[in-house]
Image 1 (tube, rainbow, N blue to C red):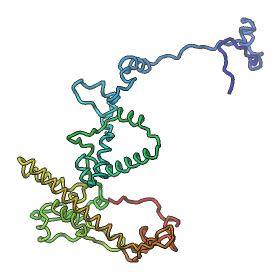
Image 2 (cartoon, rainbow, N blue to C red):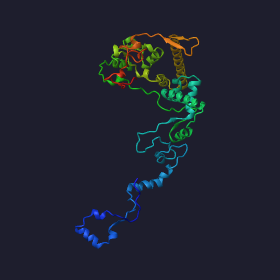
Image 3 (cartoon, helix red, strand yellow):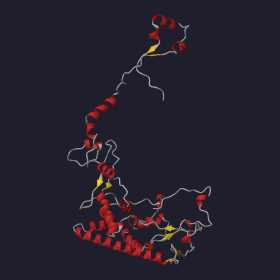
Image 4 (spheres, rainbow, N blue to C red):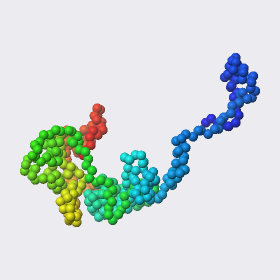
Length: 380
């Protein structure tokens, strides 16, 4: 690194060699100034000029900006708090000029622990806990895994970054654990299905009742319902009850690689179809709120029982399909499962990623040239 130049007179010894001695200006300078002054230069220490925006910035930092210099525990340190009234609620918009950006809330420690207790210890279904606290089912599963990991690390004596977590929870919006649960986020968001991307002009008569069930069959290129089938499902939520109890009721159409299920209406594909039925009951019986809630709780209990029975049946089928071999004096147990090579187990070309023994003898497509190796679609 070059040495720093001191703020004093420094003689430039190269100046006589860089200037021309034959010009009139050089003769004029040497005749009018002394040699010591002509070979010296003074470095200026004048401060840079202040612009208007720079002055306004320092004025704001010394007046209104003082309130944001130190964080107040329990409050969000956003610029919007200085522009709201004393009686108004705090805003979740950290940038006042950007109304489209909203700071999302995070779950409090008490709420996360309560979710873990109800799912793991009380053996409640993820669907029921999601409806109770207004948290998406994917987030419920993530919270359970995270709390389980935290408890495992505490049992192993590993340090936890609790001061950092408390500081973050004081600076962002937090959803607390209250007697009357505060809904954290929308829990019935419907993902866009790939089959709905096409625009289809489907003519139909005015006297015909064209519902979301019929629209799904049109998108799937499935034959339309007959009058008797349409009469069995006057509302799409009625079909949701049947599909939930018997998922095999969903029809399949297409051949080969295009073999897929018929697109179901939104009442079936949303994470919580029972909320549609609760809203229908609320509209039909506006004065019987308690009866509507009791009917909704009964419906949730039935669905939870169906899910529990389904899980137990699937577990039993899986255990029955595995032959456990325990060698005498051995350290390992061998679980042998029969492989059935059909179109559903190995795929139409025999190279499905879920097929048994796919790593032996048949190279996967990710080792071939010219094959697309990135996902080309998202399964809804």
